[in-house]
Structures are given as C-alpha cells and as structure tokens.
Image (cartoon, rainbow, N blue to C red; front, side, top):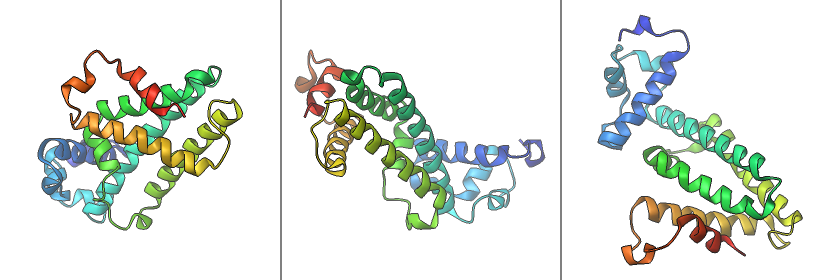
Length: 195
C-alpha cells in the first residue's frame, strides 16, 4: 500500500500495528522503523514523520496497549461496582484475559525494553492513569469491606504481584499440569487474592 493511500492520521496506527505484528512473529531484534515501513509498503522514511527512533515506536506500541488495558479494567470496575464481593475477582480475571488475548503486547507493556520512560510522556501518563485506577479500586473495596483497612499502596503491591505473577506463569505455561488439573481458573484467582 503506497503512502498516499493512507488517510490522514492512519499512518501512525498502521505503523504501530505493523510493529506489534513484527514483535509477535519475529521478536524485538527484528523490529526497526525500516522493517515496519516495509511491512505496510511505505517508504523507509515515512515512519520518521511520527517516530524519532525505535524507542519512540516501542513507546507508542506500549502506550496503545496500556490504553486498551486501562479501558478493559475501567469497564470491569464500572460493571461490577454494584457487586463489590465479585469486583476484585473480576478485575483479576480481566487482567488475565487481556494478557491471554494479547500476549505479545502484554509482554512488551511490562518489559524493560523501553529505556528512559520519562522521555515518553504519553507512556508515563497512561501507566500512571492505570496505577491510579488500581488504587481507586482498592480504596473502593476497602470502603465496601472487601479489603482490610490500611495502606492502599501496600495492598496494591501485594495484589498486583499476585495477579501479575500468576498471569505471567500462565502465559509462559510454567505451572506443572497436575497443579491445574480439575481447577477452575477464575476460582483459583479468587482464592489467591482473598486477603
């Protein structure tokens, strides 16, 4: 597809999508602005209209993932606010489902390949927004008697570590099969985050 066939504003999204596809199929070492341009059939200079370098592209891909993830968590929060006994389990389940449905994007979002995050304000803004949402959910659950009183950030560290650790082990298929026999995953998550 030639550069001039992209509608205004669509090139950046096409480059991000192509970058994610390269990441998922060939890995981080194959990701470059030149390869992304080639993937969608534009000139090798076209990506430089949107990204200074590979780090800019990684930040854009990761930011897009975090925006999608934030929306999933926010929608889950809104949906289950009226059933606080289910809220934490549903948030943990949404976390696991997002990662399972978007494994390459999720791994990039929580990797160390993005250097000097402070140079990417869009990335910093959306990740902080998600942390704020986690804290809001925890405070909400405390007010509803679903979590003990105390430091929100300490609870955030504990719950996030449990859910993220479990999710990562599931993504990498690291649990011995016998551990998971006859277990319903959502109920297992519920038991893990019950504090």
